[in-house]
Length: 94
Figure 1 (cartoon, rainbow, N blue to C red):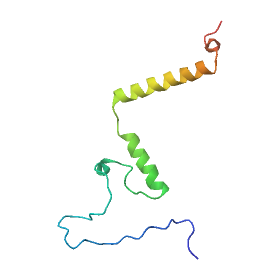
Figure 2: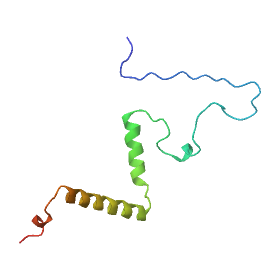
Figure 3: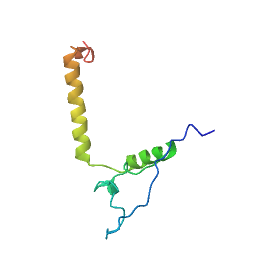
Figure 4: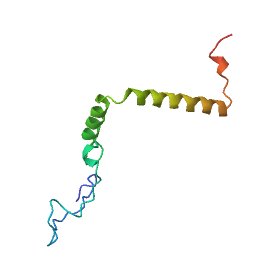
């Protein structure tokens, strides 16, 4: 009986055209920037996914990007509260 929890992998063939004079597989579809992305590589399993997420959290991003992100989030929340007619005076007191 097969293990129904494991996913089936596709078969890979090492076909190389007769007149191809280059390195690697010419039929491999890969984006130019895949070597720089952390999510492009196949990491299977929950442990590897968690370790990749922790590594991404350790790397510090652009500070201006974070500020811009939080400003956008606050503006969107305020727009949402305005649309649903939320009364902000409950936070201000009497």
